[in-house]
Image (cartoon, rainbow, N blue to C red; front, side):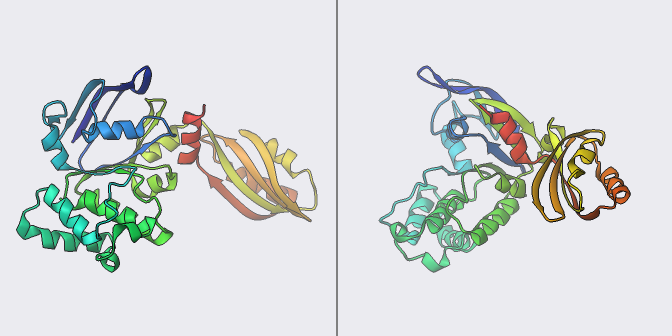
Length: 309
């Protein structure tokens, strides 16, 4: 559906996107991640034909952006970081205006607006002026304009910005449902959004792709440390030393201690599950084991390591 080859974009002497290549298939929800200034928004603007690349090739549904930009735009719904709203229009008038721009047949406009108002939760504010709406509702209107023409591809830059927790869950569910039939690229700074919504992630840093793969694969292949959260009840203070003596334990940090209660974070060489050894140690030492929970490397750990300056 989307094929990017050797894409670069320069602003004068600044190289914003540096020779990146990737593909996105139909039915895939791709998280496009990176710190500020990494080239995410520039890449999205190129994919949506808002700006040309300096070099490289992009094809959308088999169409090259150099020759077929107008047809490509008809296939894409785009929610940019700066929501493209007219604040002096009502929600209904704005959606009618967008429907006309998108060349939706007149006989279909009413039913299409009714559907999009329902899925985006805009029924209560349909007659209100956009400039009077909360940021969360304005974000919903932005999503509605991106989806109103039923595009094959959705490119969403921070789609849940300004939404409350209940609205975020609703938009997550909507994106997952849309991803069954459409191609979705989602850019966000909220890594939990990616874990809850996407089945693949690309991480960019300083204009280059530094990771690309399924979320589970990124987390399992990342060369970091697993962590075990441990809470024990024991009268002695030498627990940490005995934990450090277990093979493959790299570090033991005491988070909290109160009377005989001790909380530790045990960092373990990746690929080694030491919960059984810790349990056996607790039995031998007479510790009362209150918590034993292993955390795998999180997407946040991967992101921070790969984008650390």
